[in-house]
Image 1: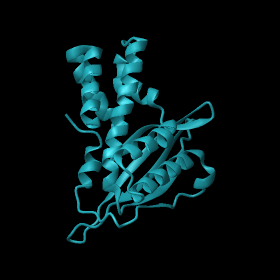
Image 2: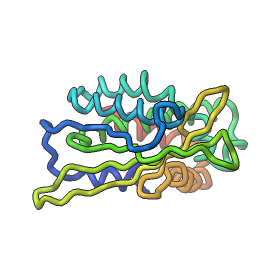
Image 3: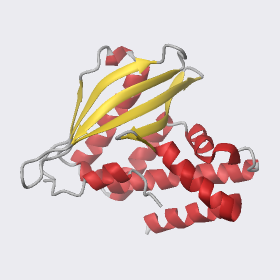
Image 4: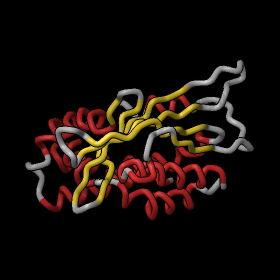
Length: 213
């Protein structure tokens, strides 16, 4: 089973100096007045500040919960990841999956954040969909610190946002063209087909518990 953010996290298995500062730059035009771009920029700044302050895992989780979660549409992400199984689930099951999936992503991100030290994040472009003005894509790149042989690696990270009730929220992220939603959809589908929705809930609970140890 694929791990969350495999491409990105594996890219971080390098010796980064924690004295290096993580930076956020913006080359996208009119980012300050383009709402979807502002959402991503503010999130990136919050995360880079956490990395540079060398916050504990517990502090980082709290920062993500308070500063990042309000910018993410977890109901839409979860429904998309469950696919046709979403409508098969009861309201109680849906709420449980949303809560556990959210905890899983938060704890995984918090654990991975320490690997960002010395990285450079650039917001390259922000475009609202011509066919659907309520959808937008913000493209970013993360340049990782140089390895011992002096080589650097740049990872493409694209954020997909949807507008509801005048708010823009993230509903998917692609890392090197690998969608988090699509990756989890294949995993969720396999588990549900074998063990049902309660089986998925049980698996998510086990993963969250393991990450919180």
